Image (tube, rainbow, N blue to C red; front, top):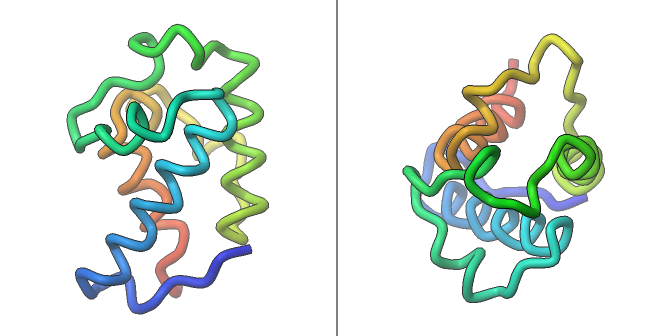
Length: 98
């Protein structure tokens, strides 16, 4: 599990973004350059052939393991998986203290 500096800081958000890009590259078998090129509007589910329904399960499980979060079934929807920005916002919200 990775710990992140304050997510309200630029450094904290950048660390989370790097971790999420690495995680996606690892789970989907993408090249580091392809994952590094992801921006907020980069399409994920429905845009990357590697991200099918089986890969979604692996991606979410890996997010739980590496980020130390719990993802409930009710948390998962098409919007959070549609773009890299949506997935990043979801991860950030899960990591913020309650």
